[in-house]
Length: 287
Image (cartoon, rainbow, N blue to C red; front, top):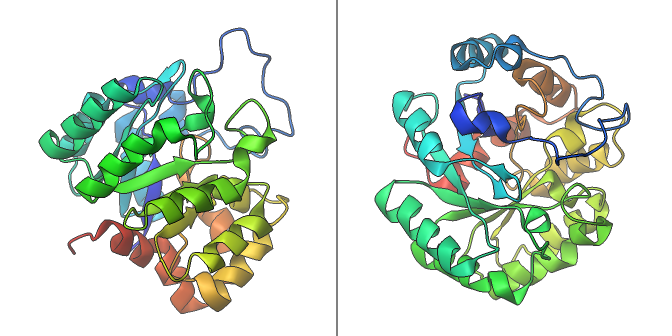
């Protein structure tokens, strides 16, 4: 079984998950958004049916729906729930996007999506909130505490793309959050790129707590990205139970992303963990 741990199919407001900043300059060749990108028909036609066909063609059995509420990029959690309920076998898990700029409203949305709508976790993008926040900003801590109390997974997006400058990607801030909330299962989306070695160090240091997971996604799979092989070595030797596979569609197409990921020399048992078992474990999925 293959589980893509972060997908945003072209359904209603999910179509705007990568909406550009108003007035921003167009992407350049060196951007991961466009480097070697093979635009799939599901994106061209904004079609969920084609997306499901592309899942079959890629050999992806299930996808985890992940929301976003950050600045002008607002995905309705109701839309995510609707898509999940339409295709429960393909999308058995959903992670609600939460905007922490208004903590009181954020806590209400966490409560609503988890306790009333059956979501399995929340996703936050602190560096894209207005104003931008570091992941260990004390203002966010009530949201983390709520997630810990509810026993759900936190998708914490952290990389050079998240925030006004690269300081928003440093992994030691993630380590602080993990230490302060030891019962909260945290999946670090983008793997704190470009601080790959430092993030691996944080993962090693976190071993006694065991509440950190990492999802390097396209920052590993796009050919030529620095640090990609470091994740392979770490997985093959000591982090094979802590890394999740994801395309982060629509950033990368499903089939192309999986092909780029499978080119790495993972040990067979480790590859099985990354492609399915680790997602099953962090979410405590019923099989």
